[in-house]
Length: 191
Ligand SMILES: [Zn+2]
Ligand SMILES: [Zn+2]
Image 1 (cartoon, rainbow, N blue to C red):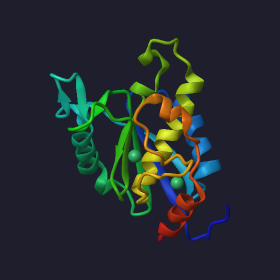
Image 2 (image 1 turned 45 degrees about the vertical axis):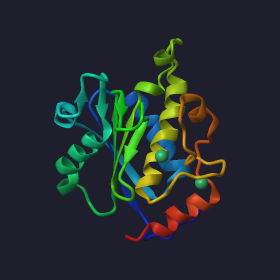
Image 3 (image 1 turned 90 degrees about the vertical axis):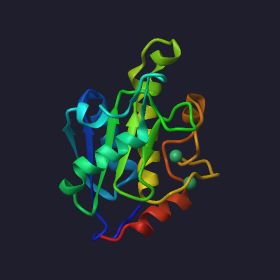
């Protein structure tokens, strides 16, 4: 896929507990194969407490994704550029009011996205942990949430922007945008 040379963005991945050994291959894949729009990526760490301390709901035993997104925005907005996307990868069970859980959440459109690996783990469903499966799912969810930051809605095609209600639906969707979604990302890139 060819892009105009002016259409280049920066991808920053922010985490506190998720190992680089998991994140690096996933981000390599994403920036090389699917979102070449990103010139490069960096991984930076953050003190997770800054993001989640006000988001915990003790009754649910989960963290409110909207509140975390707000914290991310207020903490990082001044530090990141106009042509930069930030994906925060956490290992916390997330929800938003009205939904039992979410795999991730993003500004629509915007610069900030959050993905949790908690429900992407095989161990969450009582199976033996499988890092390969975890990385494949994480790749899809990062692509999905970044898609929202580019203004993509859920997609009826066979596409990473398909809505997933459960882990089987994550596994069913491809780690790729359909032609229509990909074209929208390229069209929306105005550095
Ligand atoms: Zn979505
Ligand atoms: Zn699509």
